[in-house]
Length: 116
Length: 116
Image 1 (cartoon, rainbow over the protein chains, first blue to last red):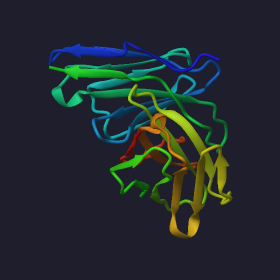
Image 2 (image 1 turned 90 degrees about the vertical axis):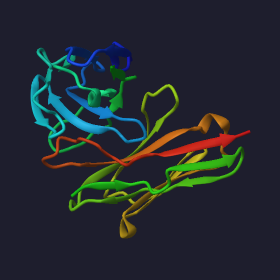
Image 3 (image 1 turned 120 degrees about the vertical axis):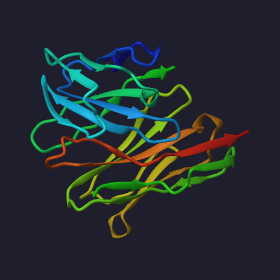
């Protein structure tokens, strides 16, 4: 099985620019998660999708952030008008879940964003 | 509120020593899952173990073992006969089942350095 993939792996941008990241989950995984990890910290939850529906967004996800999963497969995370504080590793994870169970989340390699 | 605490920020050992990484969690739910992930220098989070709150049996997998104690809300991880390849940041995480979508709450991580 192919694991979770993310593109690009690294992104350097200037403050004020828009950036978009892509995540391709493990095939047939119906849940897809986005996390953000800053240096020396554990990952923090941003949002998740079950199929194409975005079911929860963290308060960390300001209005400048938007995520989509249009066909229930890959997902995109867009950051508008980037700020230096957005510099972080953005991690994507996927899992299979149904009902009230929680399955294991498998993570991609991440996209490291640097805002100059 | 859900919280995971990994009090040890950094641990340094010499190869072949045993090492225990501590994890203490807080949750109001009676049903939850606990996880350990490894993050090597490459950055990708690697799944190690998932444990249901109803299963307090200790688990051993090769040189790895986990001790789950609900009475003290701890889920500690021991590496026996450590090797240089074990050097990484290790994260403990908590996931509640109902109403939370399975999102992971991570601790701050413990950076393990195994010296030859």
